[in-house]
Image 1 (tube, one colour):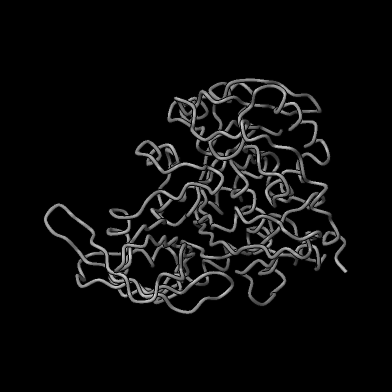
Image 2 (cartoon, one colour):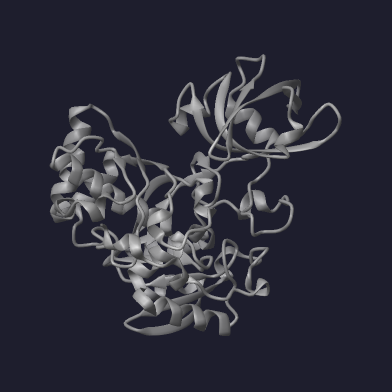
Length: 404
C-alpha cells in the first residue's frame, strides 16, 4: 500500500467566504498583491516588486500554453440552448498542436450542458469577414460524464483553430459566476502565451506584465518556457475521503531540446516554477528521464502514483535523468518532446527540479492545495489564514504568492 494514498482530503479544507473570491482581475496585472513566504516569515508586497525578492541565482520557468475558446453556445431546432465545452482531441490525432490544424472532420471529448435536448446534429454559423461557414456538431457516446462530439465543416481551407477562435468563448473557471466579457480575452491569458491548447489559464502567470519580465531580465534573472496544456480536470473537486481514491487527470506537455540543454548547462540555478502546472511539468520531466535511464516501458507517460510506488525512480540523479531525455531526443532526431502526465504531487513528494514556486491561492480540498503543501507542509494553513485576514483575493483572478 502506498502511504500517500491514505491522506485525508479533509485535512486540506479551509473556509473560503465568497467575498474573498476575485471575480474580476485588478486593473493592472502587476498591481495584484504578493505574499512572500521565506524562512518561516511572511511579507506583504505588490507583485510589481517581485524582482526585489530574487537574485540572479534564480531561474523562472513559465508555461506558455494559450487558452483556447473552448466554450461553444449553440441552439437546437426548438431553440433550446446547449453548451459544448471542448476538453481534448480524440481523432484524427490526440496531439493538441496538430489537432488545431485539422480541416475537419474532428472528434473531441466534450462536456455538454443540456445534453438531453441534443438529439439531432446541430448546425451553427461562424461568420468570417467575407463568408459564413456552417459547422455541424454530432453527439456521440458518453464516457465518464463526457461525450465524443464530431465537428465537420465544408471548407478545407479553414482550420479548427480558425473557426473555434472566431465562434467560441473564453472558458472562465466554474467558480467565476459571470459571463465572459471582452476584457477576459486578454486578462484570462498570460502576456507570453504562445501555443493553443489549454481550457484553463495557468493563472500564476496572469500577474506578469512585460515590464516585470524585463525587470527580472535586467537583474540577471533568467527566464525560460515549457508547455503544459491545462485540462478542465484541474478544477475537478476531490469528492472522496482519501486522496488515493481520486483519479488524476491527464495533461499533455511539450518540451524543447533547447530547454533540456539549458537545465543541463546551468545546474547551479535555483528553479522557480511559475505556477502548479510548471511544477508538475518539471517534476514529470525528471520522472520521464528516470524512466528512460532505467529503460522502463511507456517512459513518456507519467502515471499518478509511480513516483511513490517505485522508489528506484527517485534515486536517479537529476543530471542523469535530463541527459537521458537529451539522448532520447537525439536518437529520435527531434527537437521537441511530446509527453503526458497524471502525476499527483502530495505533501511529502521529494521534488527534484523545482526549488520554489509562484502561485495563486487555491480552492479548499483541491489537488492544487496538496501540491502547495509539498513546498509549505502544514504551514500552508498559516499562510492562508494570514491572506484571509489581510485582504488578499483568492483563486484564478486573485492575488499571488512566492514561496522561497
